[in-house]
Image (cartoon, rainbow, N blue to C red; front, side, top):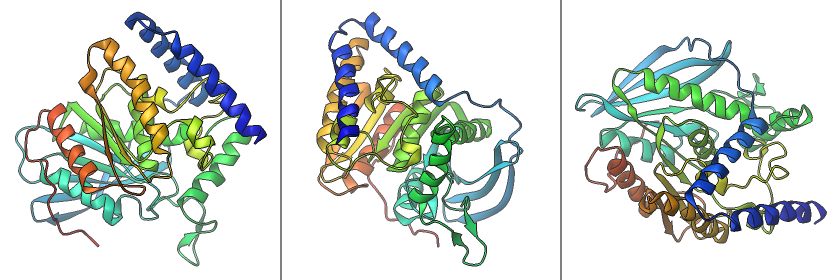
Length: 346
């Protein structure tokens, strides 16, 4: 309760600051300050070194091809991923960076494949990569069991996260940098229009999406599922999450989750929320209303949208189909937003 009260006090001070902002110029000053604070609490990032990317294998399936990718976000720090390429596409296609939530198998989980394959069927090129501690990137690997020494993805993240906090940093730095370098790779592909890039993820992938979109202006469109709310209601409910979902001293610097939305205004942003999520729905509604003020000031109210459906944490058909339509509209790739039943991969 003592720590909760400290956090609430920081959030109250932030709310008082935002209450005084009325003009577009004032919002722009706020955005510049938030951008500076984000860079201070997360960075500095390492220098951009060669990706040393290579294709390690290919799979052909009806209507699309998968290339298995290995690249380095830092020298010797390898990232596994898969590039999904539709067979039929006109010229260069929009590229989607797909961020996985807390599934042990990363983007290979059935509910993530469902989204990825529908996006590919609609003509998007999708690059899905493994976050730290998931898929083929288990950090605390037990060779005897073939699994993590310490447990699932959240434990993998928090174990590394605690070591970073002790050193005065957050492990979120590594998650963001991996995403920025994955975006470098996606933008480098000749099949992709580097001027039409988007980022999407659910849950922990929603967190990564919000971070990457806030830090990289190449992300023209962002869609965050099952993550955006505010700390006021997180502190009154489930409490803080695992290591990579917390900025080092973020609260003390006046940062809240809606800042991840507001800092990228007026670029298109979709919030995908469900009423029975453990990320509190009341906080999500407040975050949307607060962020709408920035988009209104820019005269781009329609560039911030929220789709809400009744359901637990994760996707619903309604939120997925809204995602498809939002990306089709803002990345200039018209088509049918309805979801298709596509065979999943093993």
